[in-house]
Length: 188
Image (cartoon, rainbow, N blue to C red; front, side, top):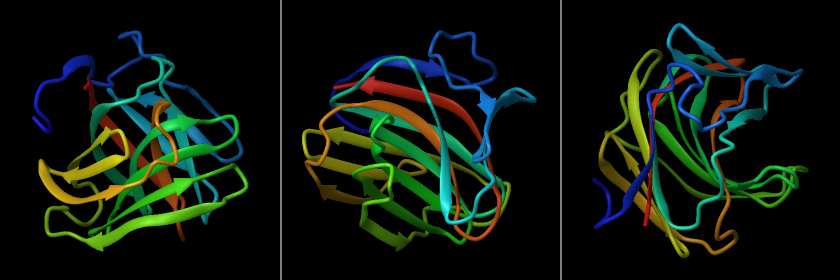
């Protein structure tokens, strides 16, 4: 639906961990990753930080990754891609309950990051308990961001060319709880 061609390699309703994509589960001091009430819930308990839950399904180079995001409490939620979680290298595309979105690149787990895109968009259904379909198409250095099937922006950044995908809750000012469903990924 986002780019010409592509092969669907992930089609997960995220109702449980039975589809073989190895979504992280568990609780730490920073947050939790749990399957609850037929959906995947990510919680970030520390403010000014995000908590994310990776899929062990492999690494991806050129792809489109989408998931339905519903913020039930707090600030922001979104998609992580081209992640290498050990050194903290990743991109995060998130939408926030105020109707804004952000794209960050993190170079390490010490918080060395850059904001690549930030704006408000009428494509985002703002407020709590609103379902929004987020997607990113990453092809070489081109990163194209979508909300509810509408392109909101594109940027070029070649920091990372491949990595894992994950789902994230971001607590800017408040403990944040985000419910995810219907994750899909197409390789390009």
